[in-house]
Amino acid sequence: MDLQTIERYVKNTNHINSDAIKMSYLSQLKSYLKIIDVSYLMENTNTPINSSVIETILKNNYIFNNVLIVLKPHVIKMSSKLDMAIVWLDI
Image (cartoon, rainbow, N blue to C red):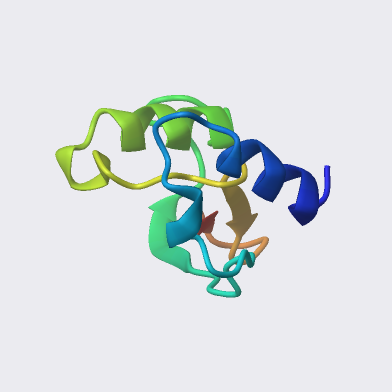
């Protein structure tokens, strides 16, 4: 879907004043959040933490109530010798 299709749809919506829309554009703002020193293995297991676990934790945390997570979180192990990970979130 391209930007012109979206613009036509929005302007044809009844509850939007099409005269108020001067120009359509996609946001160039990109944000991310990096969480460091996360335990790579889930508590009392040898199972590595994954993006589904991170998403569940974030959904249950009030700090992230109004945050839209664009992509699945990326879990990266910091070192082969450490039980620590970094989590990247595109928001």
